[in-house]
Image (cartoon, rainbow, N blue to C red; front, side):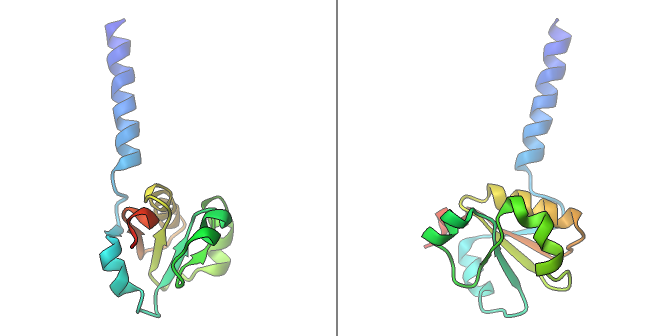
Length: 120
């Protein structure tokens, strides 16, 4: 019985680590660093929160593409030639979106750590 518990614990730790660790090839920036990035017209800025969250408060340069629609809309609305900077409320959904974009073949993906909670 102990062996099974150890295996389950190990699987749980791997799962949590996979969810928390940054995705390989995704750049992570702070909201302070984001302020400098916003001036760059060659970058795409995506807010993956729900339309209601976006409507309540957003950064003008960011376009709202909710996380649940990102895989459908990415090919039509995003260029693989440009860097895509992703934000959400806390950094969790934007982290998931960054992983998804990497899987879809986007090579220049940046996640905003702390999301809108860290924006001032």
